[in-house]
Image 1: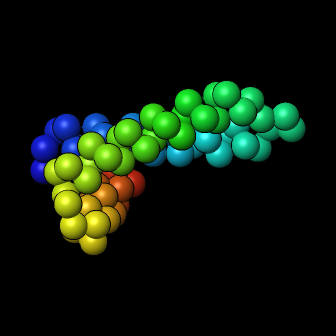
Image 2 (image 1 turned 45 degrees about the vertical axis):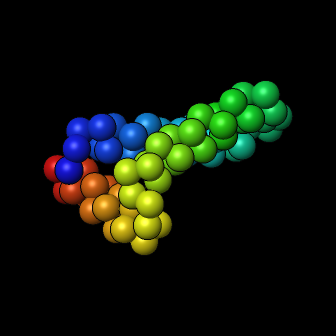
Length: 71
């Protein structure tokens, strides 16, 4: 699998964590949340360019995550 795909998946995971962290704050910064979600969507769009079939993309992403956890 391409290094670009792995970096995109890693960036998407990081953004997911940041969004969850911001949402867990007592007073979440709505502007920061919006920016994080826009970034996450942009990464997802880039991933879909490489995998137009959503089920194929999800299969690849699960494989990358599984390998990263066992590394």
